[in-house]
Image (cartoon, rainbow, N blue to C red; front, top):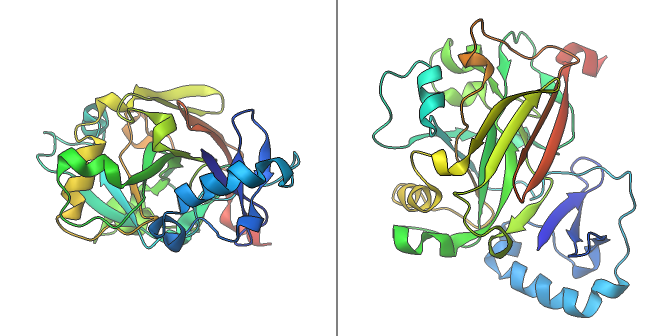
Length: 289
């Protein structure tokens, strides 16, 4: 299944894209795509509901706004420097021996085609195309061999980062990762059965029409089953939680000279089987006037 959410920000409704490409409103199912939905077998229940109700469910007409493909989760867990070339372009002298883990505020979530707001006083807002893993059931002390059983599906994530906030202000990376609009997620949550091997998907990102990130998830240092197992040794992963798995080379931080977003820039990105995103950068002051 391809799940999506649509409508005004924080007023989104649940939708499903059918095999023929038709998009339907499944509000009558009665649940949003949140922790309770995933924890109570929501994917299976929704599939059964569709067998009976898909034909009569209202269509979602063109022109709607895509929201984040899931409702706000308990946490967004991020993996840093998980592609070798990106680690080196970011200044690392050796590859990480264990995953670099940090968090991103859930208030950064937004839709895949929403504007990205360059934060107040920002001069180094950067982009990162990433594969996001959505957890489908409670995971604690999971063995790697069983880890994929805990996955509901996958989505495209742009892990926007303000590099000065992240790297020049002391403390933890979360400060540079959590501004509003810094976590566009979607357009779809594509269920695991449709994706297959998530560690063999092409992913890319372009800036103003020039492709600057172009890789495959097989290039990850730590792959999806290991990451789920690893994180579950340190925290309980709840249904609906997001693990965002790192970005390949091609970020602004790694360019010489460095390049960062300015108002009017357009970022487009996508991952094989999961769909595409597009964001226009706008200045914080311009948005609030």
